[in-house]
Image 1 (cartoon, rainbow, N blue to C red):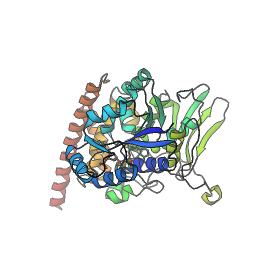
Image 2: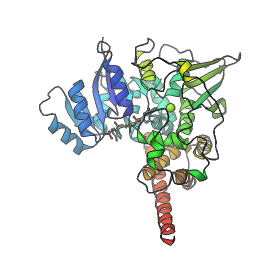
Image 3: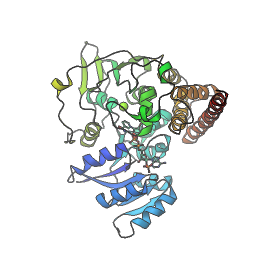
Length: 401
Ligand code: NDP
Ligand code: MG
């Protein structure tokens, strides 16, 4: 049986890696649904290449433009909107959903897939982090299988025994060791980071990724999100997880057992490996990734994260312990990163925006999708206010000089 896959975020970096692996196994996998937001030209190219049954654009105007371009391709039905995507990812025609939409925008469709009991390949960590309780409940109630694509969590999954639905078994686990590359600014002081550009922040030394997660890697906000992600996926508290910087990004994370054994998963920094693991699970399939050559890698280094130069990690560690804290952290981070990419605020002001939002919003555990959406909205508006204040202060300061 060929597995029918919905690739959400098909035009992004995770989407491209997923489609690359799928294409290597036409007898096993078929991209039945492709979803994106506004990238019409790239979506047209993908639809011509893969001939999915459905192409869904978040933006209705983009969907119209795509439908116009694909007039001659009757195999693909073009539609738009979140409700349509919910319907398609829940339909019996889809077996597996790759959650590769960036940010909070990916939550709704991923929740629908969980509720419908699909196999979910989860890249969209923001959805899990913002609505962890709700999300894990939906997975349980729907009987979904949840497989982590994020390379660190994928490594943890690979180093743990699992049950028939892919649920990790945590007996005898003493610690999870979450590795971090340290990003492009590892070793720099905070003072030296005030003038770094979006281009410098997005130039990750090891991974090629979308802009948002690249900036998150540079601020270490990504590691904060991943700490929360690991707590939900592996039913841990933050003190059961250590964070270690490993600049080569070859060891993707480790599990320490009670007998002192430490199991690690190693591999090239190429997302096709964790994606292929999730697609193949519990079997293995080829990913097209070059073999790991440890002799040419030479050395594997480990060091402690610098929480002073990169305060986002400390902010996340605190937010994890507060009800709804990570929903606010993640939403404010999205707003701050967008403002940094638009050159409205400095790199070192991203954490200031997050801290302001965490102060401004009254925190409480969101118990429904509505409640999560409300908390996300409040956090975004608090963050936007902080961005506006910082931007106007910066402008005044520049004029004075
Ligand atoms: P990209 O920016 O490369 O791609 C984002 C994708 O999401 C695009 O296809 C975009 O469509 C789509 N999208 C954005 N908003 C919407 C919306 N409202 N409706 C439908 N589609 C939407 O991001 P990445 O691929 O880098 O990251 C995706 C997710 O995976 C993130 O949550 C990230 O944290 C996670 N992740 C990524 C890794 C990586 O190596 N890239 C590693 C681990 C996790 P469009 O092009 O039309 O805007
Ligand atoms: Mg990761």
